[in-house]
Image (cartoon, rainbow, N blue to C red; front, side, top):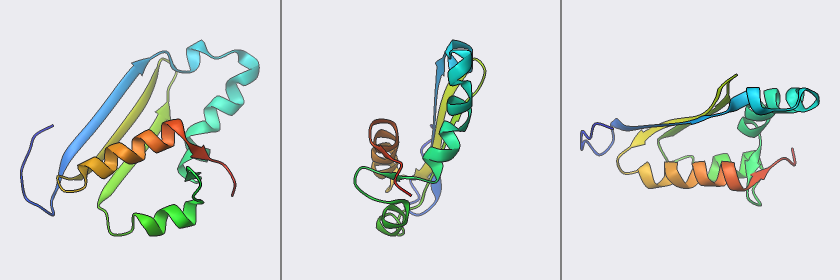
Amino acid sequence: MRPDYQENAVNAVLEAVSKGGASLIKPEDYPSAAFAPYFTSISGVGNLTRTQFQKKIASKQVSLSLNINNTTEVVSGSSTIADFETLLQIINLYITQPCFTE
């Protein structure tokens, strides 16, 4: 992460990579795992639907991507310095409290 300290500029970037990925998944579970990042990206978090969640963070400047590759799981995101804590909170929610209701 390279701090820039311009309040509204996208200047905080985060990437976390974990070894494992799809190579650790049983063949019968692979279809679910392959679509997990997509379903997570269109779902809500906690007790919020995707629409409710989007409204709640509409004023924030954050971007997040979750992926499962053959040998890794990857979480990457960016935000302004002012919204970096929000980015971390969103990552935590997507990993610990996904909401697949829609």
